[in-house]
Length: 288
Image 1: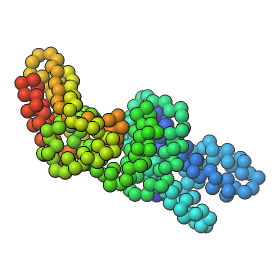
Image 2 (image 1 turned 180 degrees about the horizontal axis):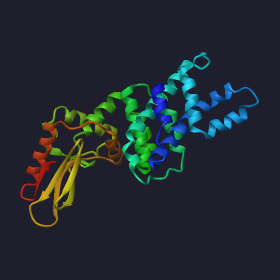
Image 3 (image 1 turned 30 degrees about the vertical axis):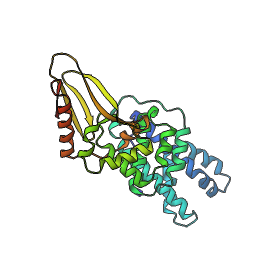
Image 4 (image 1 turned 45 degrees about the horizontal axis):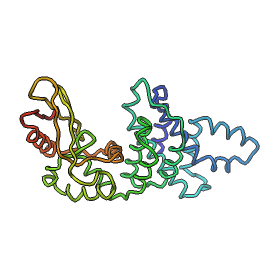
């Protein structure tokens, strides 16, 4: 846990995304710790110290370190555990935004309402697997704030651990963050049962009569979980392809981005073969 605080303190805050990550860290720590900080600083200097605490992220991290050590036992053990939960989630979010820190720009985030709601809920997440989901949720909000709204936040909050595991497992087969061919459902173990959970949660649209379509040309690709498919039209120029499928709802699209479950080689090949069969005479699909 102490190493986690060191990582937070040394965050490369010159990068735009890292600046927003640091702002989120500062907001989360300050929101939770300020009442305890005020209670500790009983002397007249408290006003000056409080202003430093409110404006200096490094002071917030320093106090967080003192708080979780709780050497004199003055802080409630439940509160210390909630702070540890929050720090674990923050550290995970830092790791998930490392690549984004190379970008020269980042979406602006002017409203702290979402972060207030997030940190009010995140402190109760003690399970490591669920902390990972919440870390990815925060990272996604920082890099794509318009995609993660309050509805998605509460959607994830209200799911049980078993439901989240089922959702992440089932979403691994969806292609291009949008669809799964309906004729492979019975070819992948337990998938049809998992889809029942996705239906009940509103992650996929009811029914199976939807048709996904797109125009492809040489060099076109479709993304899978941990795999990329190259789609090459047989004829010159653009070719329209389509497939009967199950489609993700808007909430499902967002949650799919949070899933880190990957396809196995056999599953990736099965999807590739299925699409080749469906688009025979129009386009060929290969794994790259």
